[in-house]
Length: 137
Image (spheres, one colour):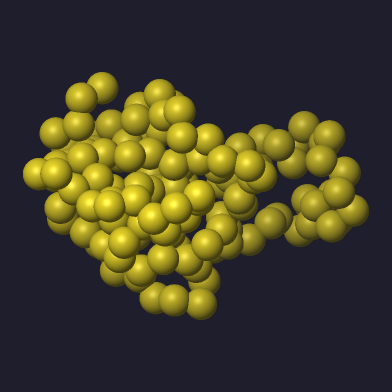
């Protein structure tokens, strides 16, 4: 996945989008803010991800999660038909993004944002969290 610093202009895809900011485009090479947020907000993010239509090509796997030793060989050899591999992979992978707006600013975040928050303690910017809280479902 591509790294973008939080709240920088969105530039992923065909062209830059005016008044759209990137949130949650994390990479192992860059530190990110950590903290706790309300579990109800994480659940709302999951619902927004489930209803999103912003699908991209390819599959991104969370860079912060280590593949269990028992599945490392399956992954390296590309034997992706293994059900145990998919069970591990599903909550740690994504192929799209959500968009939420507040005060004429739209935030674009990868589907992995709920995972990053819950598992890796990523703390998104407060304006994004307010936009999520107020977003219609």
